[in-house]
Image 1 (cartoon, helix red, strand yellow):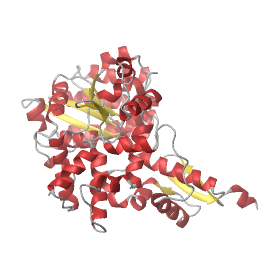
Image 2 (tube, rainbow, N blue to C red; image 1 turned 120 degrees about the vertical axis):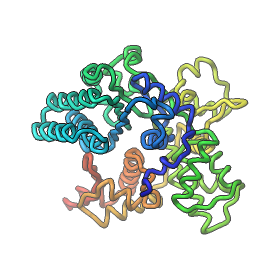
Image 3 (cartoon, rainbow, N blue to C red; image 1 turned 30 degrees about the vertical axis):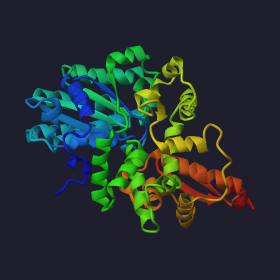
Image 4 (cartoon, rainbow, N blue to C red; image 1 turned 90 degrees about the vertical axis):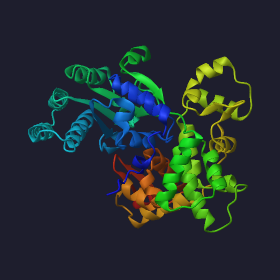
Length: 438
C-alpha cells in the first residue's frame, strides 16, 4: 500500500547537502537545533528524512540500528510540562510497536506509560521515559527524538527542562540525541533557560534555507502528481521562481494556478500578478513578516528597496542571511517576489484595511454563524475555510490571524456579534454583551 507521505517518493538525493549534514550530526550523536523561516519546508525535508527507507544507510550509518522518533508538538492540546512529557513518552512507546523487538519490552514500555498517565506525576513520567530509552539503547538501538515545532513550548523550556533532557542523554550513555525544529534557534526562543553561549554547548544550530531549483522541481512534481495538476515546463519554472524555493509558497502557487486556469488563461506574463491577488498568499507573507524582529523588518525592506546594506546591518540581521530570506546573487535581493511584493504593498506602515470581509473571512464567519453560540474547533475551521488544501497543513498562526482580522472587522462594523476564543480548542460566535443586555 502506498504511503500517504508523498516525501517517501522523493529521490534519495533530495536536499542532499542538508541530509548529509543532519545525518552526520546524528551519527556523531549531536543534538541539533534545526532552524528555518516559517513554512519554508522543514516539514517536507523531515518527512523525507524520517520516512524514506534509505535514509539511515545513505546518510547516517548503515551498520548501526537507528530509531528516528518524531514528536509533533502541534499534537499538544495543553501547553504545559506534564502534557509535553506524557506526549513524548507516548510517541516513543507507540514507535516501539513498529520495531522488531521482544514483545516483553513493548509490553513493559506500555505498562510504564499507563502508570504515568494514571499517576499524573511529572517525576514518574520522566523516570518512565528514562527507563524506556535506556532499554532501547541496551538492546543495541540509537534513538533520536525529533521535537517538531519546538516554538509551541518555548515558554516551558527552563534550565530544569534542559537539565531533564541532559539527564535522559546521560542515562543512555550519550547514545540518545535530540533534534529541535523551529523558525528560531532555541537560544532565542528560550533565553530564560540558557544563555546562547551555554546553549551552544548543548546543541548545534543548522539552518534550512529555501530549496534550490533542482529540489523545488522534485517538490512540484510530486505535488502535481498528487493533485493531478498539469503544468507546462515554462509554468513550472515560473512557479518555482515565484516561490523562491519556499515550500508553502510553492504549494499555494500551484493550487492557485490550477484554480485560475479553469476560469481564464494563465500565462508566464500574468501568473505572478494573479497569484499575488490571492488572500492565501498575503496571509503566508504576513506570517513570515510578523516572525521578524523590527530590525530585521527594516533591513529586509532596505534590501528590497535597493538601499545600501552595511556590515553592521548584516550582523544585526544575520538571521535573514542564515535562513535564506536574503540572497546574494549578483546583488542582494529578497528570496521570493511574493514576499518582496507584500513588503512593498504593506511594509511597516500597512494601509488602512477595509471593513468589508474577504473571501476567507466570509467563510469563517458563515461557519461560526451556522454554529452560533457553539464551539467551532480548529479542525472544523481548517476543513471548511481551507478545504482545498487541508492536507498540506494550516498553521495555528494562520488560523489565529484570520480570526483576529474577522474579530477586528466585526468590532469596526459595530456588529451585533462578538468572536470568542476557547483556549486550545477553537472559537465561537455569540451575541455581543450589549445586545444580550438590550
